[in-house]
Image (cartoon, rainbow, N blue to C red; front, side, top):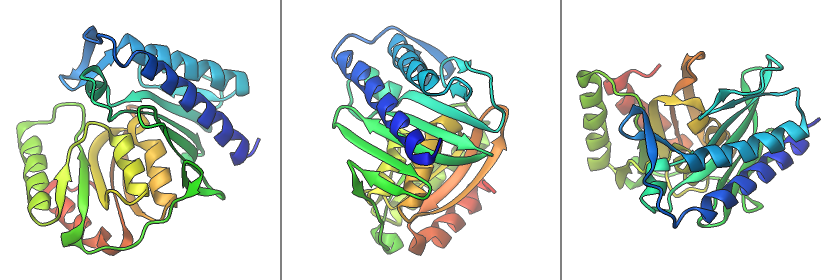
Length: 266
């Protein structure tokens, strides 16, 4: 089993899950449950898409552990390699019929993401990457260039869990400061899709504090293998929480200094 074989099944699973999301996109998805915050919600469509992914991955190799956003640990097998899945990243967007959502799947071995796929079903865009192969959008290789900070566009991913008021205030202050000193700073509602857009150069930098790893694992690999520079820290392996900064190489120092001055992620 090599990265090419793993990548093929990740792509297949992401596309099949995306079909389910699109089949239900125009329906009334007002029935949902709130998890850790008002923005952290789940619908029955999340679980339907997730179950489709699980079935495909288990049929490929039933000896690989699987972690999912909705069901947690569903296939407790190997300890050094696992799939990590977000079958619908951008659920709030989805239930409000905003087409900024995606399927995110990553394969991790020895704590290192090896392959990943992100499928954006509304636009039929597929992003994928594998170590030793590269980073791609719709089978076109991705490679970012450089830019100046003032000409850059950023995206931030807030933690789904409510922080203490002082921390949350700093997050909003940082967003404003970066927004006013660059082309802008957005909070889109999908960390995975932010990172896919970073990989193709639409965004120039992204950061997140205490993000769930299933939201960002796939996208971090795709963006990094496209030439972006990454700083990250797993702040809780048990809860899959990760803080990160990733950007085009030319602006990494400046955005890191700005983020660290407020949030001290590392």
